[in-house]
Amino acid sequence: MIPAVSSSMTAAAVRVAGRRLIVARPCSAAQFVSIQQRCIASSTSAMLDKQTIKVPSMGDSITEGTVVEWTAQVGQAVKVDDVVAMVETDKVTVEIKAEAEGVVTQQFCEIDASVEVGAPLYEIDSDAEATVEASSEPA
Image (tube, rainbow, N blue to C red; front, side, top):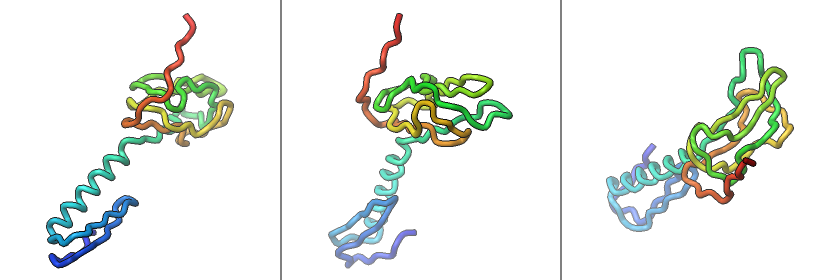
């Protein structure tokens, strides 16, 4: 909802996506709305940079698994379809692949932790810079 403003307004504060925007000069209602829309657009863009990836379905009767390996570490850049983690069930070991290109910014569980299908597994940020090099596998 856009608040009503007047052209004689000297200061206004608006909260958009948790950010406070202060207009500390006289402005028209149209200018105020323009500033507010730019704030919303930049906040929305920032929110879309990070994605929480959930434990995928691993079969009809499988409801949970155990994280047995993190192949991508926090701070490591990954590309689409890179293996990020390995989750083992009593029937199969599943490679969890990156759904987007970016940097792994959080792992929501440790190795040997039990995870349910649909639970948050890791977070990826498409706008972050890598801080950790990918470890090379033995030849």
